[in-house]
Length: 81
Image (cartoon, rainbow, N blue to C red; front, side, top):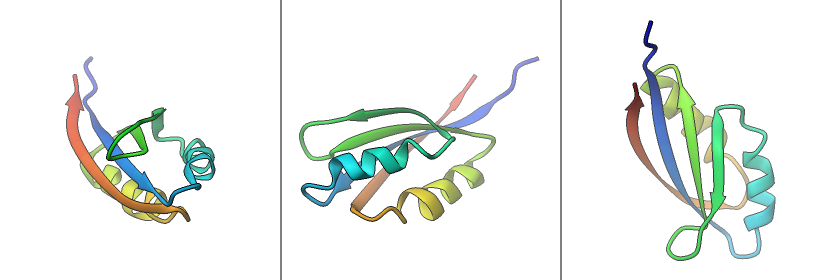
């Protein structure tokens, strides 16, 4: 049986100097399955896996964007087959 999951990649910009704090807070979100620091326009990228796109949106809005020190996010979506 194949289970399809909603997969999202969230590009995150942080307040300068808050990168480590934001990184540590993101590690507490169980739906984030990968988290990597970046150089350039964005400071972090998080890979999320959720049961559907509704839940993916809720995690981004209710958990990720609520973290102190996050300035902006961009979300890319796909599915895992």
